[in-house]
Length: 68
Image 1 (cartoon, rainbow, N blue to C red):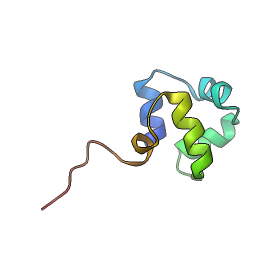
Image 2 (cartoon, rainbow, N blue to C red):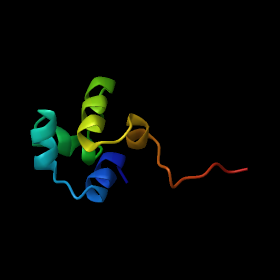
Image 3 (tube, one colour):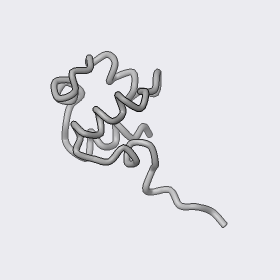
Image 4 (spheres, rainbow, N blue to C red):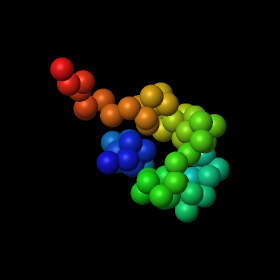
């Protein structure tokens, strides 16, 4: 699952609310959440700041563990 979408659910935040906080459109954020497109680093930083998380949390799935 997409990490932005997961964090939105965890924070109980809607795409509309995230759009207001970031200045990005709902359509753009929806395309990120649905893996249609990927944000560049600048937009990822803006999203992370609005969500109150580190960028790493939007890139790396903390539930996955290394094998072997």
